[in-house]
Length: 175
Image 1 (tube, rainbow, N blue to C red):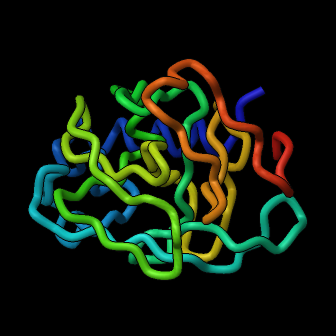
Image 2: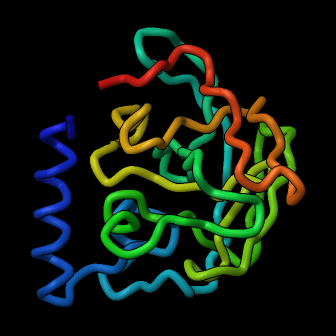
Image 3: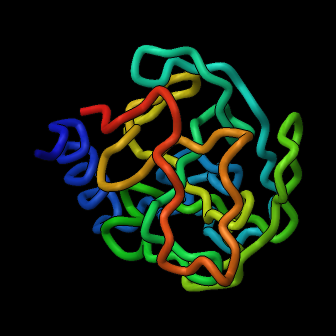
């Protein structure tokens, strides 16, 4: 069952996008979204940092973007390809930057050049925000096979394509 806020967010984003006022990068308040005309390919450094958050009733340290929005990974993605495109990317905008930085996270932060541009990855997992989240708020846990990214996210190697990581602690499916 889809979460009602996901449906409403999708309808709202589609209406604004149809009017030409938003891009996938600006939908989630990513660093490239300082103005409504910003695009996913803007040369902006994305900062990935850690922060405490309530995830399914448990306080956990998670990864967030520079604006404090929770970052998620999509279980079907591989280390070499993001499967989040089109309308799915409207609800789950990819975190993009040609030169990301990390603060407080010990994992490997890299860039995957794919359909979403310079998509930031953490331990091989492409990262996303959720259109319905606000800083310090995790509402997308377990929705549509997305899970909050934590500093201890198991590395996804190019040889493990098709092997999904374990569901992070504190989560289950959420909604």
